[in-house]
Length: 53
Image (cartoon, rainbow, N blue to C red; front, side, top):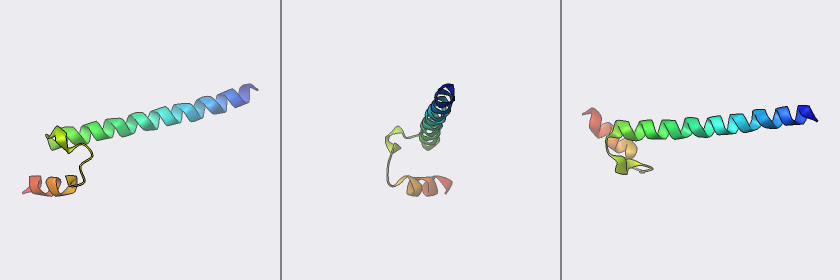
């Protein structure tokens, strides 16, 4: 029975950790864009290319 709890705890920890990682990555990406309206924008790659010029 405790083995099941350990496995469930590992899976939940991995899920929460991955969700936190994705949220951190998105926030970091939007800060680099310096335009908070870019969140989820389909044209982000075009914006990124224009910024390099």
